[in-house]
Image 1 (cartoon, rainbow, N blue to C red):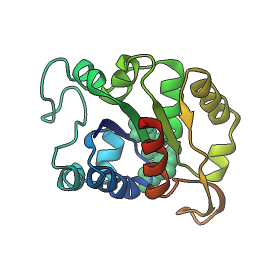
Image 2: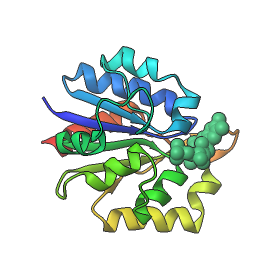
Image 3: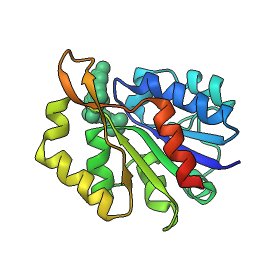
Image 4: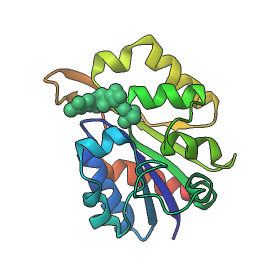
Length: 179
Ligand SMILES: Cc1cc2nc3c(=O)[nH]c(=O)nc-3n(C[C@H](O)[C@H](O)[C@H](O)COP(=O)(O)O)c2cc1C
């Protein structure tokens, strides 16, 4: 099947990304997970290792490093670059081309033409913020597909848009993008 680089950032919905990683693996894909440090603080990378059979990469200088050029090696393998969940912070960095950790650096190194699917997840007020909307629009201009966040009850207690889409929906869209 296909090689997917799964970028995971520090949203409360990171627990759903474990299920997503599991479903992608069960569908036969090879999943390389790259977590931000904030994501790894919210959920143990061991959980992703358990469901993908590969320890996640966390940053360029941690013990998770495989080689000096992890960012290039990972980017070269990507048949799909999928970021789920994408925080408001990560959307801003990617929209600006900031590359100050492994995940953001891989993003710059992924070849043009590789499908990129972003799944933002955040509180409804954060999602509606002009800066966030501007950054998501920039990502679309840059060739990303941005999945519409789900609507409903949020972990913060609010109702509205900003939920990470269900893993099955993301899996289906990933499959379509991979053809
Ligand atoms: C428990 C918890 C849940 C959070 N959930 C979200 C979220 O759903 N979306 C978001 O954009 N930020 C969320 N944040 C804030 C981000 O973790 C914060 O902006 C962080 O700097 C993101 O770093 P990263 O993009 O490198 O992962 C949350 C923070 C905490 C402590």
